[in-house]
Length: 402
Image (cartoon, rainbow, N blue to C red; front, side, top):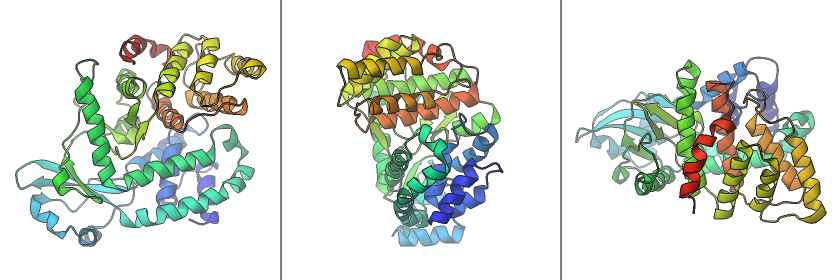
């Protein structure tokens, strides 16, 4: 992607016309990832644009069948097909990093075979370097971006998660980490609506992963069809909140295309990037949200400062607290469509940094998770007051926190 292509991408997303998904795909993997991040930004993009961009979670150009066979040979996996009694060369799902084929093992299990798109992987890092050098120019033409997020931080987040996704051994390992936490805690915390598929690691590799076939739609598809209820979404938050606040280890890229939902069960996909936060961030962020759900803004300001690696005090803190109270002066009782939790948190962190606080990198993984949750709530129930509905989980989280 050159500078002209990137400017066209931004204009495609922020401009007045319809989203050209074909153009985004032609720009490569980085462009698709940027489009996916914006798919939930209904706080400053139109609902129609977000709906169009959300198609990038699942409808991305497929590798033709003949290319699939060539990839198997290139990956040194030509003998893999001998493991199956049936293999469908036509993919049933395609995403930005890879695509998935249905198959049946010789032993009878129905499985999904995921394969990395090599061409996308090779061009991604070069595009990241190019775009990183272009952000200053983009901010000049689109100053609106400054008030929404740190674009360099956004780009780095995309880089980290995508590099992890490009090695399917990371996905298998991340899946194992989350499943181990689930098994160790399911008797202490209600995780009955979370389930894990089996990954066949003995026949999986860096570029190919074989796992149980889960016949269920993604949360993204269900939201698009209006078939995912707000109560189900709160349960997803309940589960994800346990991993974030109680454990501090969580799915680092939990957008709605990365969660399947069927038969009352949630299944995590693309677990290549696992978010991790230390005890100080984990606990104080929980207490921040507990206070925010009760509209106790003085305590919120205190716990935000407690989260920081470098804290502020004295007059510096007093000035920060005054500005914090101004930022939240009109927040009480607002629905997610009236006030974006994502935008509010971005402004909160920015205020802390400008006031002199410094935060560990892991906090931004949690902010990204909240961004995804906020976007899903806006689609499921735009009249919801999410923070008030979170109160029902606070006691349960707190009883398990160490």
